[in-house]
Image (cartoon, rainbow, N blue to C red; front, side):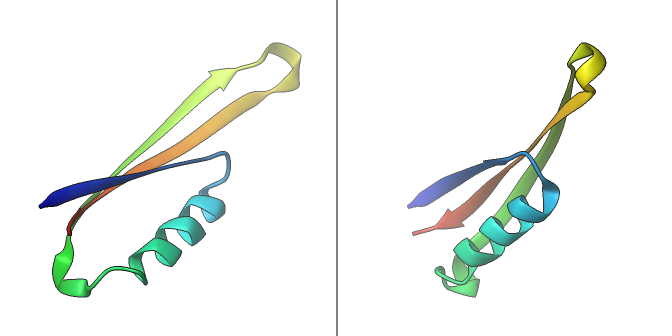
Length: 60
């Protein structure tokens, strides 16, 4: 059965760490793909807010 796992972080290194930790829990043969996205939002004088997200597709 095909499954997805979603990840959402404010920092790219946090996203990398979370995905790597998850990938250790699944068999390499069950890995299908990763879809990645970055979104930004302008917060006026406070600067920009970044949202790094990914979806890992795998077989269970």
